[in-house]
View 1 (tube, rainbow, N blue to C red):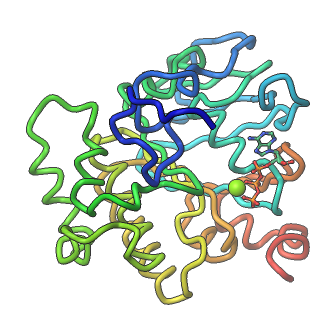
View 2: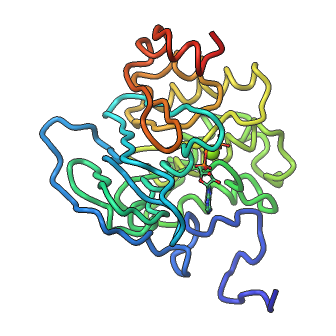
Length: 278
Ligand SMILES: Nc1ncnc2c1ncn2[C@@H]1O[C@H](COP(=O)(O)OP(=O)(O)OP(=O)(O)O)[C@@H](O)[C@H]1O
Ligand SMILES: [Mg+2]
């Protein structure tokens, strides 16, 4: 590796996913988009990745006509086996992928040509599956980083995040990397909320935490949804996630295998047998 990029004020800090934190650099370019944007149909979901086909750079397509969406006031959950393309679908919706077909619309308007940064300005917040906090910065600095696009006073929002996650207030001066797995996920979600998003996207927010911590995180996620922020999330705890989901999507090999309400999927014998352990 060469000398560190001195234009990057955060240097080699914890979060390597620069597309969500930084407003210049190659990684912020949207994936090439060669689909056809449309106006959304009346009454379509608030956020929709519609019939998305695409992959990484010049590589093969990973997503095949894949649709995921979330309505206002709802929680939508994406489940499916490892490698099914769940994270890829999230990255496609956030603009980090080359889409060869399909569209992404927010509030009925195509955003498929926008950079991830521009999508944040339009109201999207994304917590990626890995490297979603700055480990060497304090909890409070992480939240401040989350507010990077804001020019107004964000102290009220920070107070709301601390109300939602009281442990973060207690640990606000501590390095985020010193926290437990569940607390780090709270930092990541809190950071995302600092932009006052219109929609929140979470990729495996309960990865690697105990069942008790998972339940607590789900409770907080429901609380966020109740404040009026629709949530599109990927979960490996499929059964528990579908229990709190208004809508669910089962992805297999980059394509929609099943979709329906959380209740419908939990009751579907095929889904139960293949994805929920019977
Ligand atoms: N950055 C990348 N470049 C090229 N291929 C990738 C990249 N990231 C993922 N893939 C490939 O895309 C496919 C889908 O991976 P993805 O990470 O979206 O699956 P996933 O459903 O999120 O899996 P997991 O449950 O393990 O998180 C896999 O074949 C994977 O190897
Ligand atoms: Mg994943």
